[in-house]
Image 1 (cartoon, rainbow, N blue to C red):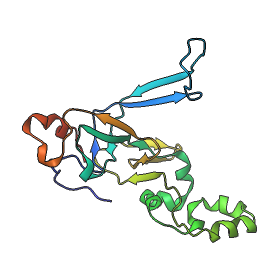
Image 2 (cartoon, one colour):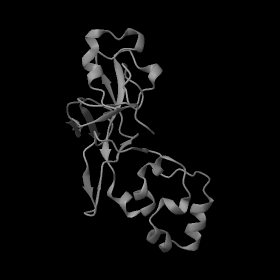
Image 3 (cartoon, rainbow, N blue to C red):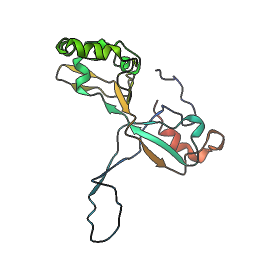
Amino acid sequence: MFYEPEMDKVLRLGDVVRGYISPSTKIKQPFLSFESSIYHNYDISFEVPRYSVILTPCCSIGDQMICLTPLIELRSDFFKNPYFVEDFTRINRGIHPEKAVPPDEWQGFSDEKKQEILAKKNPYTLLNLFIYEPSDLFPTYPKRRVHETNYYMIDFRNVQTLRCEMIKSRDKTVVEEVPILESKCL
């Protein structure tokens, strides 16, 4: 993964953007009936993450809609693994299964558990996550009291659709849509 020194004048897959809300909906069960006697338990919350990432493929951006996910801090348990601490983007690549867990955790596994892990054919460990390289744009934050980092990640399970009139395909973007392009950071 890398950052371009000059930004493209269109929105693209993987772009880091700012200024967007991130809604989250939680329900107890599906709403199968709208009878007034039935209680529906739900919660809708909103946050404005400092940064979000565009997950819509470049050729699909248009029609006033994109998919976004918040750029979030790394999980604390990543810092238990010295192999990850050296370069957190290793999580994005295939790695030897033994390196996917902290050494003390690996040593605690039974021989059967180790063989089961080693027998798996998929070298990727955390498929729902993607780690972004550090950037001077990203603030540092503490983790586990001894580490400070400015690596951030996205979780592909946390994606929202955003509709905005300024979102247009590359060939339809005009000067009036400059604010949407100003939201692009990396």
